[in-house]
Image 1 (cartoon, one colour):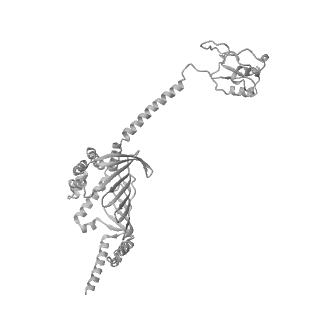
Image 2: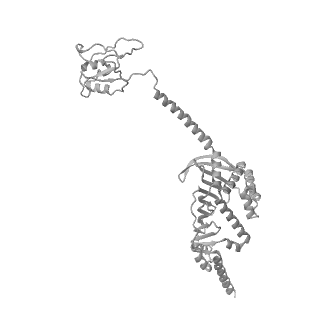
Image 3: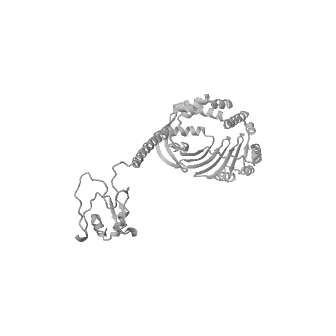
Length: 443
């Protein structure tokens, strides 16, 4: 079939000066299923709904070289000479034809997509209206805090008065063995005094307490200078030297020298705490009892949604909280009837939960206000940050606590330490020397 005849069959290609490029474009047209039983060049048995006159394109070659009009019901187009083919062996490219039957693959895909949209929308609905419901988020956070086996915290307290400012930073943790570690740093500044000091404390699982204060000498010198000679610590240089950056151990027996009742109370509480950490059934029973008590007296009220932010890399939801004083008082007073309340009462008969509840809910003399904000992890519903902001009183203060639960960090008991008895002996010596000097001056 001559190339000119191919051009004359398609009016859209009649302006194409290169017949081979025209044939390549036709060859790469999207193929559809071919009719192998129809000879090339013969029309497919397909009739239009309404017969039309054969289309007569404008010839692109002299009239002598044109052929008879082409019936456009034919679904095939012959492209000679493509990729080395000859007119005697043409390559056939079949143009796409509209299908009268629905495409099952597309239909199934649409159905699957619709189902995913419905299920996804339903899941999002449940996620936002149930799991991320503010009451559930805060309730879960409080329950998770109560049932946590261990907690680690970083806290900062900033206080600003009319003529002074102080910043206290605290970091520490407790573990599943009821042992704990705390590190404290204090920065204080006023018109007359400025100092920095830090210390550490360890609470061992057997009830022993270890305390260490650093920079004691520098602190003593600073206080002496600011007093303008009113305070003299030189008599205590021996004590200061021994205490500075040294662990001081306060055992249960040491506490007994101060108060036998306090010693027994401390041992009773330490024993019960240790039992709680080892007896999982008891731990669950105590926890469930407190959870039920709070569920019946929900004293935490969500006042405002604060949106979201990241706390130490954890996406968190924030809420401003108010408190129901009546329910808080009922909750605290009712602790006396719980297992843990009864045990604490057994360890210390002077504990009065009703009195504690009353003191917690009494309004103070200050005209200041306190704002409480709580941030909870978006997925785990664990407290990531809690802040208390006090304004309008004698001083403005902000306390920010960032806890991490169930990390279970180790607590190492100091190996080298001096006993509190040894410390008291050194202090008594210093006082004796001071009194001797005072008496000698009077004589």
